[in-house]
Length: 120
Image 1 (tube, helix red, strand yellow):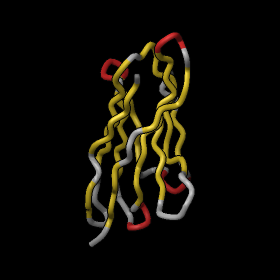
Image 2 (spheres, rainbow, N blue to C red):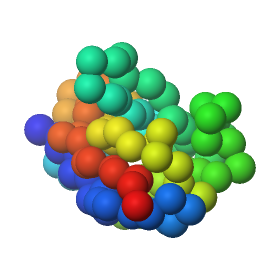
Image 3 (cartoon, one colour):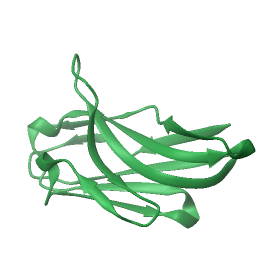
Image 4 (cartoon, rainbow, N blue to C red):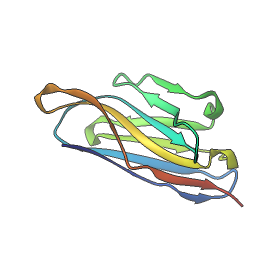
């Protein structure tokens, strides 16, 4: 089985920074794309940023220039560096990875989510 475990969320003041991490473990043959999503209560989950296995990145317009996604393939880890945080960034952040695992089956896996709260 494959698991994604996120860390790094918390409370930060407006203008501050946080770095989220997500580690994949288990029966992994290859990790394809990885990404971060976020969700507010009662709202749909939305893409924040994604990164392919070739390190091609994509960002939501609302976070361009403030957030940076990166990955460490040797550690099966994806990061989200969040700078200049705003109160509207307050969400639960989820990691998603497209993984080829046991029996070469490819599917999406999600982490459990980590709360990010931006408030003074």
